[in-house]
Amino acid sequence: MAEQEQSAEGTNTATDATQKMITGSAWMTAGSIASRILGAIYIIPWVTWLGSYSNIANAVYAKGYNIYNLFLVVATAGIPSAISKLVAHYNGLDQANISRKLYHSGMYVAAAMGIVCATVMMLGAGILSGGDVNVVPVVRSLAWAVLIIPCMSITRGYLQGYAWMAPSAVSQFVEQLFRIIYMLGATYFIMKLGDGNWVHAVTQSTFAAFIGAIGAIVVLTTAYLHHLRTMNEMARNSVGGADVSTMQLVLKIIYQSIPFIVIESGITLFQLVDQYTFNPMMKMVGHYTNYQLSVVYALFSFNANKLYMIVISLASALAATVIPLLAEARAQNDQQGMRKQIVNVLMMFYFVMVPAALGLSAVAPQIYTVFYRYDQAGITILEFASFMSIPFGLYTVAAAMMQGISENKKMMVNLAIGLAVKFVIQYPCIYFFRGIGPLLATGISMTVINYLILHSFNDEFNLPFHQMTRPTNQILGYSLLMFVVTKAVMLLLGHLVSPYGRFTAFFILIPGVVIGAAIYLYLSLRFRLADRILGERVASLRWRLHIK
Image (cartoon, rainbow, N blue to C red; front, side, top):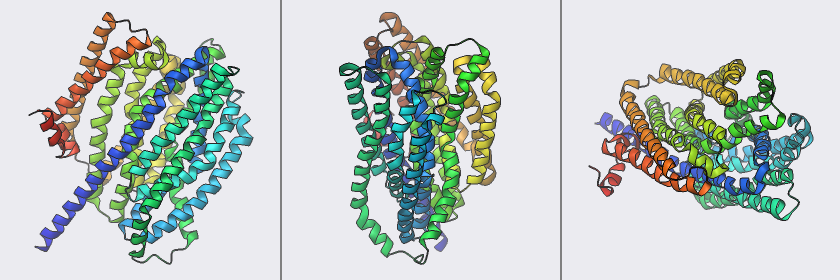
């Protein structure tokens, strides 16, 4: 009887964890997708107002943001993710009082790191620009955001540690909304009403990150005050841990956060390799002007990146959700729970990411034209980048899971191997494939890292790949069918309506997206794939859509 009760309790715990992951993923996905879509839609007026300067402006914007992203990871010192993990860990041990101390200690560290990194960006912008004078004011404008975002991110991580994902999702959206309103207003004023200086327009557009951060801080502060009573009650009911000193917690945060710095900067490190090696390597394989190289760099580092990052944001949402859940299972030494969570995350990733990537590739000519104007080179790069978004996204999720189970050292080794592969194959890939070479080199390197991570998971948890084979094949089969039909529809409509104009491309894009989504949705519901991955609640959707 006792064993049955224990078994039932374990089943309920696993179900609750799965439900938390699905609910948290839904919030984080909604927030991430909404902010990414906003972050892509602004491109349409932004590119229009910049006119003939748009591609070179995109290149400068991308270079500044790559540097900013690296400093942002260092400034936050991986603390938000570490805080999220540690808060979930201590809450799982009924020690919410330590979680609160962690938050306060983390705020001190984050504020100090923000000041240091912002100062370095201000004073070292000339060196960081790589010799491009147009990048210098952009880097300095982004230093203001680095100053305040660490404290904002700490609060996000703290709330996520309690599995409260809604505030993070809403704050992401508000941050993006404030940022875009400011950058579009400033760009219009400079390019249409002012002197038309595109460097000033880009500089103000990047300074908008600071404005967005202020909006997010307002949302997170409101959420913190809303949940304060619950957190106080949990702290009062805590079991032990009151004698843990602030210095001990600070050292623990730093110890936990160092691997996060390296791991979370993974994609940014790959982008920086491209930023500092692309021009020299391209000049070694052909005679190109600096303007030509800036345009090609913009095509893969900004234009395509903005669109396929919408797809990767799906993976980022899963990653943010899974870290605290795995940390909680690790704290309770729940091997079966960790194994189940890893399998659930992988299957949810495949279920969402594969069709999204293939769908983006199918409508690449139309969506690129809508956002940037028709450009065959840009379309080709986006089509290729769509497929590369799968290993990019899997890295985001897999690295998060490694962090969640405290395999930070192993993950850092895997990342080092991937970067070594990137350095070795970067030149050959650029030599043979020119503009898509950097994307191919990154895709191959990410695939190597992903293999090492999954191999490590299998060694420790003996993953049931035989059970995952059928749904994985279904996902791939349905996605390929959706891709073929959607591509055929787009080609047919392209013969009936000119695909070269923005408005005509938009009207072609709508039926393509609707048909592709409908095909995948129908197949996944009709053959019960969605039920196995998302749970029984999907049955109500099938009933409403009259799918047997």
